[in-house]
Each structure stands twice: as structure tokens, then as C-alpha cells.
Image (cartoon, rainbow over all chains, first blue to last red; front, side, top):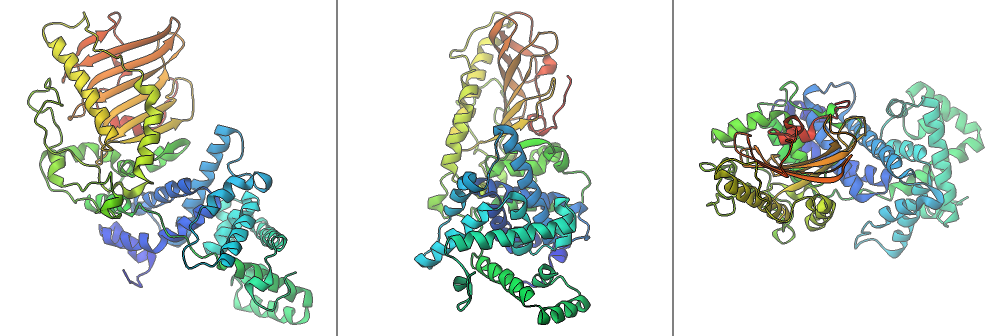
Length: 203
Length: 346
């Protein structure tokens, strides 16, 4: 379905009764939103449910959708809020965090590590991948969501502030802590600059 | 500022200032390099392949688009459905329901009129992997209400038109695993069914035996369809509140029709402290025909079995005694009752 049509225009067409336009939107964003949800929650079945839920909401919201924000941002917002709700409920039910970082971070890591590394990934890149996911899972929740929204979702700091209800400076400091925490964790794992850009110092 | 720079969020003016500053600040340059380095590593993670489930979304989108555009006001109940409610979408078919709750009546009219409907999306997975998936033809849906002429006829014995198949089921994870866990969750509710068809003295006329036979076969038939994966189980846990439902379970077909609705809530007013599960089974026309109540009240554990005719009159109630309050049962509109928001203080 190669098309350069903008998300917003596609949504307009869907509002006018063209289900094919929705199909294009779905194919365009589904993998990215799923990746975001999987790395945010560390729980594959949950991420799959939330993914479906997010797009069903898009269908539901289409009639009322206002082109105030980009559709992409809207999708990340909904996905993030659904994940936050799910985490809250899980805490409520089990009275323990869904994915406590650090020592308790194992469930999250397990969920992520269950990913099929794919045939074309070498052992070394599989190791890097594990390290990256472990580093991600070691972040506190509020840092992880800021990092993923900005880095993976391409959501601006101002928009993240709106989504998370935290002031922009707080969002940015969470991002700084996240980047710093990730770097430190990766260094512990022996992953550093040399893996990203040959010739770096890694410290 | 370095973060804004890294993510391209600086306006041209400030961007130039930051670059000028970086030229003079070695530690700032090092910091900027560290940011880039970490980002570079994470870019190598790439994207996960999207899981299955496109079919259900497309079917839902077509349903919405097919309703004359999605502009129809208020045809979705999303906000009310979702807020403060633990909503577990067990299988994809359930999700379609979410989109058609408000249109239930319209759907029935459409089906009754035999108007062709958009067939759901073809399964995405190859046939080998699509054990539980079946294509649905619109005509089959129109033929769905089964005990048509003679409602007392046993569905099992009746000549059966093709069943409405569960469409676009590829949404969720592996169907067999789901079905298994679904059955597990239902195990407790299943035990609520009395093992034998108890004959009731409160039924009038020779219809009672037929009513019992119909009730038994209806329950059996629906359980068989559930086991065969034709009905999907949806489960809602509701935020507890005085007088409100605690949990609801529904068996939905691919078109969102509820064939079974189980509701766990406090005992009806005047019956004292306690809780009961109302396990309700519906016929092809969506009428309540069997209700199995299993609860605990001031006098301890109790069970109640109620059989209704097609007009909603009680043919049998067992054990006999003061009848279970009618307002406590959902006679029609089981799907809507399943999705309805929590109501407290009844």
C-alpha cells in the first residue's frame, strides 16, 4: 500500500466511509506502536491487547477527531495511557508493581527477551540487543516512558509534558536521567561507544 | 538545550546560539556526543514485527465505515466503557463487539431484512495456523436465529442452518491457548449448573418437560460451541462498589451477539447479605431462556434454576419457592448489559 498521503488526510477519508484508508493507517503505524507498547510494558500479551485497543479507539474516535495534534502523537498518547491504566490496575490487583525495575525487573526483561532475534542477527548483535533491552527495563517507569515517547515515538518534549501531565522541565530532566541511566547500565554490560561508533572511548 | 538540539526541537535562532556555544565548550561537546552515542545504540534495536490481529481491526473499520461513514453521532460507547473498568479483551471477536454495542438493534434489523453485509476480512494466517478461524458469509448470519418456528425444539436436534462463524479471529494470540484459559476461568461457573435436569413442580402444563429439555440442550449446545471456539469469552472485572456488579462474563459470537451472560453481584434487595452469580443463557433470538443462579446468602449456599419460554414467562423454577426477582435477570439485550457501565447502589 504505497502512498504518500498524510495520516490526517487518510483519517478524513476514513471518516467519510473509506475503510481502505484506515487499512493504510493501520499498516503504517501498527508495528511502531506495538514496539513502543512492548518496550514500555515488557509484557507481550498485554502489549498485543493494548495495541488492538489503541486502534479500536482510533476507529471510535475518528468521528470526533480534531486535527489539533498529529495522528501519530494521538496514537502514542492513547497507547501510553492504556498502558498506564493497565499498570495501575495491575498494581491495584496484586499490590505490587507490574514491572518493578532493578531486581524486580526480571519479568519485564523476560517479556522482552522472548523476542525472536531473527535469523539474520548475529550472536554479537543478539547480545547487544539483550543488553539494550535490559538497560531499558532497568529504568524507572516514568523515565522509560519519556525516553520511548521521544526516541521511538518521535513525540516532542512539549507533547510528552501534555501526555504525562508533568511540566516540560521535568520531562527533560527525566529524559536526561534516562539517557544517563541507559549509558551507565550499558557500560556495566561492556556495551559502549565501540558498539555504536567504532573509535569512541566508551566512557 | 542539548536535548532539544539532539532531537531537533530548537528553532533556527537558538540552534545557532547553541552551536556557537558548543564550539567553545569541550564538556558540552562531550555531553552532546554521549547523548548521540546512547541514541545510536538504541536505534539498532529496530522495530518489532506487528502481531496478528489486523483482520479484526479491518472488520471493525469496515463495520464503522459501512454504517454510512463513521460520523454517526454517539454510535460508540468508548469513553463510558473504558473508564475505571478492567476490560479484558479475550479474543478478537470481542473487540468487534465494542464497536457495535450501540447498534445492536440496527444490526438485528439488518440481519432480519437479509441485507447483505460486508464480509469480514479474510484470515491473515495461513490455513494451517488458522485452526479456529473460519470465514463468515453474510447469508449465514441472516440464518443464525435457530429455534425459529418451534422455540421449544431442541437446538441440538433441530435441522441446523450454518452457524454464524467467528470471523476475523486472528486478532488475539494463539486461539487454542486462549480457549483453554477461557475454559479454565469458566470452570467455576460451569459447576453452577445442576447435573441433572431437575423437574419442577411450579411449571404448569405439559410444557414443563419440554422446557427442561430445551433448557438442557440450549446450555449443552452453547457449551459445545464455546469449546469448538465458535463463541468467544469476554470477561470484565468492575471496580467494586456497593450494589454494583463485581464481574461479568459473556460468550459472544463473531457478530457480537451474546449467547451467555454471567453476572456476579450482591443478592437482590430484600434477600439479605450475600452474593450470587447469575448465569444466563440466550436463544437465537436473544431471549433469556435459562438462568442458573449460584450464590451465598444468610442461609448459606444456594442454587436456583429458572427456565423461561420465548415470551419471558417462567416455565419452571427450581427449587420452588418465592420466585427470583425478575428485575434481577437480563431478559434481553445481554450484550448491551455486558458492556454497560457499572451501576452502583442498587
